[in-house]
Image (cartoon, rainbow, N blue to C red; front, side):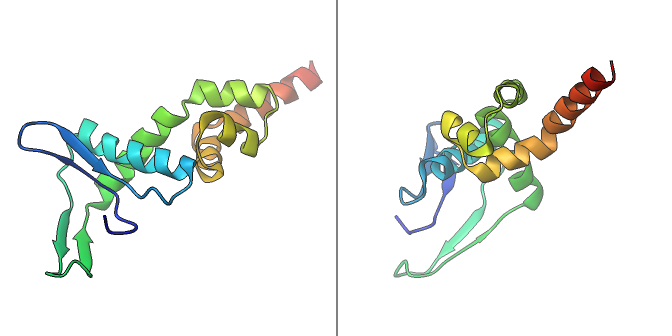
Length: 131
């Protein structure tokens, strides 16, 4: 395997193969693998990979829209909004949420921003203070 390569492909017989970097942290591996599975779920066209004859140089092209869609789906699956909301209601920190769900803190922070969980909890807290 070439270090840093993460790729998902369907074989001619329909089986899926995902190649990932085992040197990444557990949270990063989970994200990488789910990202590649998301490409398969979404029936995305695989990236074009060009490798030198000796394998020392690899170039790949990709569709940024497909990459964004795969990230979005992967991260929603790894850390659903309801799970995130439950964790924040328990006052778990970003690090504790990441550890509990085997994801990275970067993923937790992204999901917190994108889901509106923090805003929802702040609004609920403000309503209780003014009631």
